[in-house]
Image 1 (cartoon, helix red, strand yellow):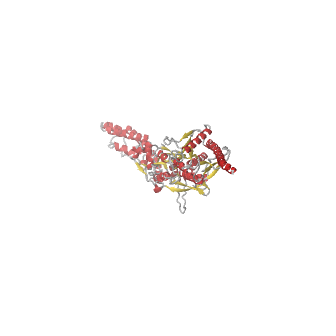
Image 2 (image 1 turned 90 degrees about the vertical axis):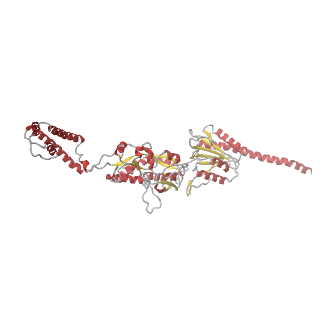
Image 3 (image 1 turned 120 degrees about the horizontal axis):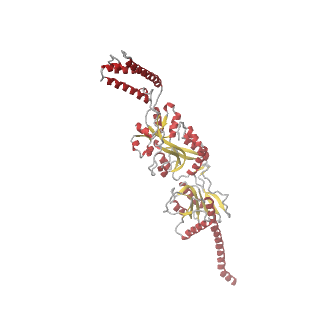
Length: 572
């Protein structure tokens, strides 16, 4: 009985000792994870987020208002910054801070899906670069199913086209797990599936680990949506016939074909609606044409002689300029000479001037002699010459006179005039015979001043008027080319055939393409003065993540000279 009483008295002490031992062991495990977690985070940051000219943006949020969770996140961030050894430039997120440009390197610290949504609702393309690097750290105890939590987070990020993201979380055994997702995989296009990427079990060596590979190195045959329209020779859309898929050629179409091969994707093209071609980039909901397709994310990229402009940069995301052309006026090869104009071609203006001077001198002398005596008149052009002026004109045009003068002086004057007229008339008739057989045209207009003085009308698309906002005298004489399938190319055809006489505002390559495919008699000339430099490239939706990978490939293609080769192939 005494042993039973003693056991009852000591049992609470024994249970307390076991509980303390368990708590001590649990606390020791948590302490190990707490020491290891910031070290793993700092290792990832130093390996992938270290850039001398780009700051690391840190943003954090916790569920509810529990001070312990907030304190835990702050302690973690303090340890992370300490372990980075001042190797990183760090900036903490502030909702009212002025954003100069979207942040590329981002660290997000959350303790669940609700806290993640707090940060997510502040994310847009102005603050966060969709092609940037993202590291999400989950702290504290996770109450949701981990796979579901990761899937929700990744799906939300993919809506913003954010895919270079890794999630670090502490497992129940104290190891550090790294999860990610790949939006394009074989037989899985634009799908979000969490993938265990790495397991830190005790050592951290990031030298041979790349947590941020190029996830878009290959699209694994997945389709992308491209917006375009026909703008020869940039994009040429042949008649499809029985083909179900739209085929685009032209030198920008050839560029896309090569990108398809290198990045292993296919393209489903969508044409700008209602023949609206480029359209205008405005506030969302007010854009038109191809700009509307890109801005509203109905396509993944747009191509088709897209020049870089301020409005497009504001509402769309530009790639690099893969080609630079010139905007200038195309004019006809020169108006053909009329038959009457050809009569003046044999002689230069100087010869015509001197001939008129000689006729004027003869006329003045003859009419001046009418006021002198008969004796003087008989001495100059002979006696019984009652129609001296008519004789002058008859000899000039190759006729004869009824009576020759009898005096030597008058005969000498007559002989000199006959010889002069014979030489001039013979040279004129011989040259005129040759000129009448030639196809002759006036020299084409070469400068904008020449075009303006000629009085011919201007033809241009509505988007071309921006070049002449300060030149109302040009806009007053401008006829707008209506949008439609290759409407500008058809206007050039009419100019070359002489159906219209005017100056058409076009890119230089369009004139070169026209002169390559049409006969010489329908060639058009371009003015020597350029209106503007015309860099062209791809445009993407504002939050697109394709820009970086496309730009990298385009730079490589540019360095080979292929784009210049394609341009020459489509132009004269």
